[in-house]
Length: 140
Image: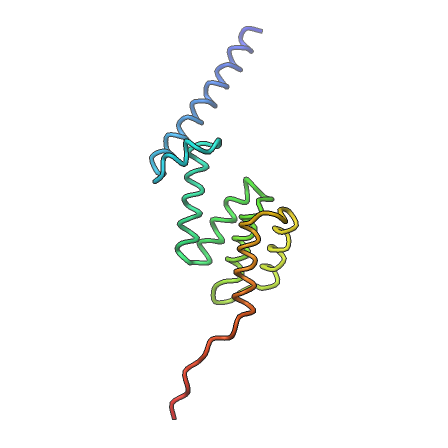
C-alpha cells in the first residue's frame, strides 16, 4: 500500500512539475505578462491568445485557419473561434462561403448574445453584401 501511495505521489509531483515547466516556457513567450496573470488559465492560455491575435493581424487566411483549428482542439464549441474560422474560410483566393456561413450560424446558435460573434458576423455580411469594387476602364 505504501509503495502505491509513493507511486501516486510521485506521479502527481511529476505532473505538477511538467505543468510548471510549460507555464515557465509560455511565460517567456508572452508579450503582455499581465494578461497571463489576469486570466485564470495561466500563461499558456495567454500565449495561445497572443498567437491568435498575431494570426488575425497578419491577414493570412491559412495561418488564421491553422491557429483556430489548433485552438478548437481544446475548445471545440468556442463561438469566437468558430467565427474566426468562418472568416478564414471565407477569405483568401478560393473562399468557401457555404462552410463559413455554417460556422457563423453555429457560433450564433451557441452564443446568440455574444457581442464579438455578432460583430464578426455583421462585418462579414457587410463585406459580402456591399457594393462590388469598381474596376478601372479597359484601355483601348
